Image 1 (cartoon, rainbow, N blue to C red):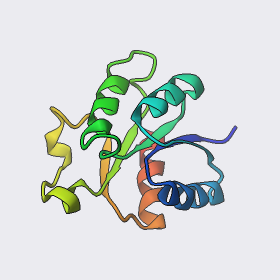
Image 2 (image 1 turned 180 degrees about the vertical axis):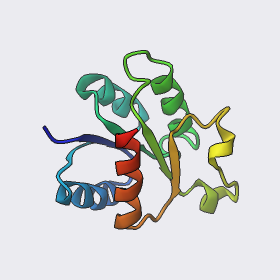
Image 3 (image 1 turned 90 degrees about the vertical axis):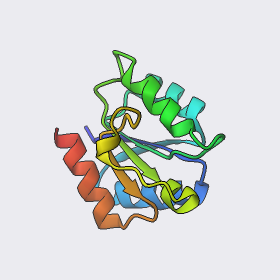
Length: 127
């Protein structure tokens, strides 16, 4: 059975680009255009990994979604790759040291190369 990935992002072009990369490696890819529908999709399909944008309907919607995911016992085990351009947009740069409020398993800045995406996803899925 293929590894299920869920992309939650409001950029349709980025979703398609990520989907092409992941599908070329055998992933089953699902997507949602914003946080609330993404959370519901995660509950529905129980993905193996989630790729989550930060700034969608609000500048911090991704943070809110990751907090909800990590505090839901049936979803908390799912690794989250936070993929964002928040550093470029705001000048504020996040790192894994910010775990108190950044409830993600890994973090990458947009744009991400296909090889970096696959590398990060494979590490998260193997944990």
